[in-house]
Image (cartoon, rainbow, N blue to C red):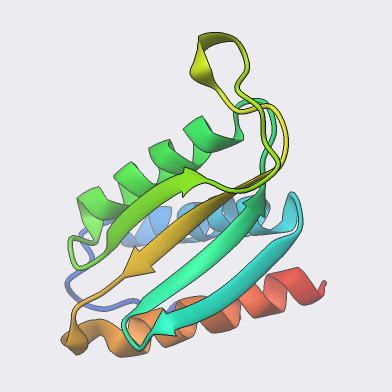
Length: 122
């Protein structure tokens, strides 16, 4: 899914930067086991492999994404099996990332789910 035509007009990220941002998300999805569920029609839940710095990377990327695509709401939390490391960072196990949108952007959430599936299948 290299075509970025699904990106809504309400996204304020400059067009030239969009492929770079997609690559950042792809790298995150490809870095470890990903589980994807759709607990609600307008919310995805990703479970990612955790490790040193992963939670911070996820939060930072979600914050930047929310800054240009205000229709996204991101929430993160620790999954099962992790332990707290120095500075409160998690060192093992999993973490979750919820991605929610408003009804007008349901198609964007569908496209994101398809992208995650495609990356995880590689």
